[in-house]
Image (cartoon, rainbow, N blue to C red):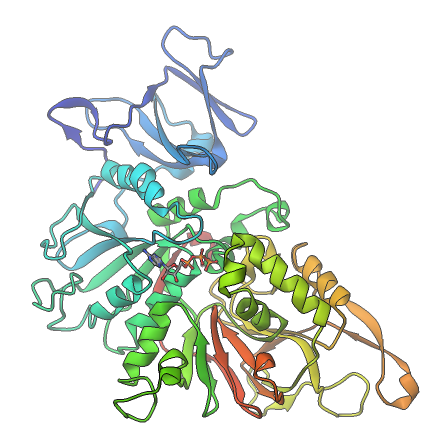
Length: 541
Ligand SMILES: Nc1ncnc2c1ncn2[C@@H]1O[C@H](COP(=O)(O)OP(=O)(O)OP(=O)(O)O)[C@@H](O)[C@H]1O
């Protein structure tokens, strides 16, 4: 299906909601910008400019109108209108920079038909709460330009050209939606409406998710592991705070300066380009297993509900009368993740910053909680065993000052499948999008200043890897020895904690906090299950 802008009978302009467009007579590309002048205007004194970085897509104008429509996004996060989708009708297609943005055909993952549905989820509380504005002012008009119209009714039939949009109403919305998918792609499946009537039998589903990492993790844990179903494909539009998965999948498209914190290419523009021209690939996931007695102590409601639902009443023994504590802190034996599993400073920070008192400080809460933790500089008592790629043997991470003795104190133990926890925080510089390799970043007990140095180096594009320092041995007369940040590719990692105080027995899996028992463990390994597929820029495949 050609991605031409449909004409409406009432209007000779392209059907683009109410958005007007500019009509260029001359266009020229210079210094990373498209400059244009209207009829009678002088191109040397352009009337308008479109930065190449802001171009989302180029569509052929509707039949009868010669030229091309250039869609670009302008953002003003603090402004009254945070997003503006602009359209410029240009008389010809300039090879540079426009050819690569031309969408000649409707991508298969957006082509709605009985066997393939499209669902947009707007997570209203993600990030700074701008997902709704982004949908209204950008995504809806853009999809309309492709001939796709939104509907909100659960029982709407799957007709070509119409997609369903839903906004989150509570922390459980995404997970409930994921669970309602049941067996999309299996015979006798229910429709994505979740009405259970089996009215539509979609073979495939694309979900456009306007959220941060939390939305993805809710989907991941909500869809379950139906082996026969075709996993839904997720298109991410990064409207959360950290957006670790999105930034990691798009890292090769950022410049080194952007990875080290400079502004520049808008992630939302990249997200829209991937939505329109991306390719779908399996999303690598890991399984974090926990020793008996482990409890979920802080989690987004969606995850909590999924854990409780798996166990009926959530207490792990089928007893219908779980205690309050068991409801608040249900037992848990595993979680599925896609980003990070950690113990030590990272897990404590996620846990400590999530109190009502800290939450009142908004995004500053992480800095405040970090300052407190760094002051304490707790040495986390644990042993860490890894299984290296291809090996069947577990080996303990060793202390630098002893012959084959395991390291017994850590500040940082973090296993990840992605490169970046924020766009500018490169925790695992060797990780490539979709490579599916778990990598472990770790270092021993150090003071707060050293931990800050390591974190700052991670904000400089991942320079913490390879950092070395000297430390004094506990034994051996306080001899000076070399230590530093460890960084290993692993197939599996097992952290066993030896901490009497539960405060230091927290582990973090993609934002969810689990408390282990003293002597308990967390084991993290790549999962073979395919729960979701994800759209990525074709260049990263
Ligand atoms: N309408 C709503 N009412 C209550 N909670 C909501 C609502 N919509 C979304 N949420 C919750 O808000 C959280 C948003 O998390 P999400 O990860 O998307 O954003 P974030 O935390 O800002 O970003 P990131 O995880 O990337 O740093 C989720 O836990 C989700 O369940």
